[in-house]
Length: 436
Image (cartoon, rainbow, N blue to C red):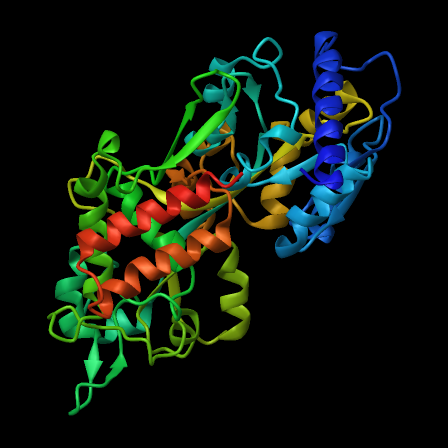
């Protein structure tokens, strides 16, 4: 073990002990003293967080003092870990569920004696439960950005199609009307962008959604035999989670759209990326995040498009869509754990989150707020999608992207049959998950 590793490990042990002491006297409020300033690091835009805090402070007698630092997603892990090693870490971080396992040892869990697991499940949408472990709550959910379907209304209307597809199997019939090929079978217009990877925006998340809708959780978590740590494993080829019985149909469906011998053929790797194709009017449907709506409007203000929930498996038991989610975690380096929790709780109050909906144009993470619904034509779709949103634990998003890409391209290139691709990908994913 290097000198740097020894110092880092020693610091984390100190943080753990300090965290346990802090929560041993935790009261969940700090009404007797003025709240101090706290530092929060995250990858969300600083102007969004700053505007949010300013709006909240307008109606507060005591202003929240938050120093928020925006860090590029690609740099976050390194910046965060190196800062902790120097003893200069933040009080809290905004972290997605798929990276919570990677930083679990740097976070102080909020004990269930402070915020019960029952109350947590009753308060927040199901995806938030990835933030739970046996010791407490690793993060309090803040914002959710679900994957939805954008569809070109002109394309559908001109083809005599009255409404959008609600189920994946509808794309077969739609393809005969919306996919256009020239005399040489070159694709000129397409109904759906699936089958390839590199030129499909959010391909990892779309394929992952198909796994989730098929009943495969992508990864699963269990406690180590000594009870001291959490182990995350791939479920894609794991028999305990019916492995390929649930993941193989999803991969087969995803890849068939790039097979020229398949009647559903509508996409190949020579085409522009899916978002560009949609913006140019050559792709009838685009699977993107709710947060992309303003970008699409700005880049093609003349396009007549609408938004719908992501298609589901007809008769499926697992209605779901992938969503980006971010939650506040209290870091073991926090100067004042009680005050940090109090401030975060204020940021997540229903009256505060109403401001976030207005600022971000994204749905809430709270069940009670989703239940009230929205009269906005787009937000109403986002609300419904947030309720069924899911994701999975990961340790390296970039690495899992490459594993998923190889899984798909090994099938489309004929290198492996789908069952071999699933098992190979699952094995590689398992190794990646256990690196930490």
